Length: 255
Image 1 (cartoon, one colour):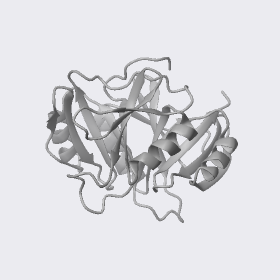
Image 2 (spheres, helix red, strand yellow; image 1 turned 30 degrees about the vertical axis):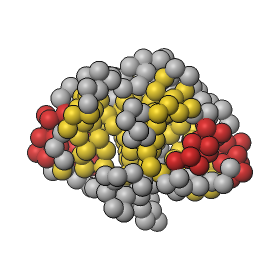
Image 3 (cartoon, helix red, strand yellow; image 1 turned 180 degrees about the horizontal axis):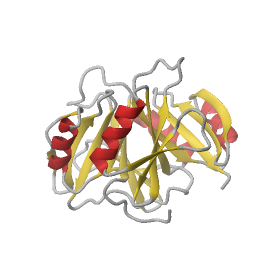
Image 4 (cartoon, helix red, strand yellow; image 1 turned 90 degrees about the vertical axis):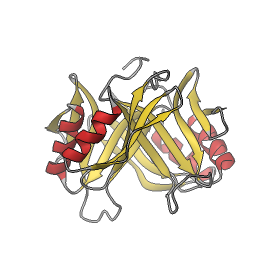
């Protein structure tokens, strides 16, 4: 996908929540090439690659953060109407907080799927979301939810966003590919039996060399959660964790 603004039904933004923002900036800057720009009002930092913004970086200690919020990467999908998305999520068996305005930038809402996985939706006004090229090293390129309630959750996202859901023919785990306007936009991984984390969305970032990136993450004070391994017909990936506890995926494509 070349550089372009995301359309309704596509993930258009991420938010990284972490303790020790300055340490996080140093880690992700060195590992993924991110640069940072202060958000007006002092609430956090825009994350950039070149001229493209694609996310925000926020300190878990900032006022207003709910107690016991863990470090992580939150995902946000573009919609035409955030209030409609809230009502639809509730009708489909999920939950949602009321939509709210983010200055003149847009309108957002925090939603919860029936399995408990959290995500957000964005109705753009002045800020349309990102236009970053997903194949640029350091850019978010793939979004994946992990759940045990495969059929119910697949139906929820299909009916919420107008996606189609198709079982992968190349993945014996029962992996589900979500499509929007004929393009793959996200995936669903059935949780392995030994998986003990709650249902959640994960984000993959493009890198040139997964093994080198994993080694570099350790050098920078991070850790490897899942060792580098191949994705048949796609490339190679790993799961890493920042020094502040933010888990994320990296992937290099062979196609």
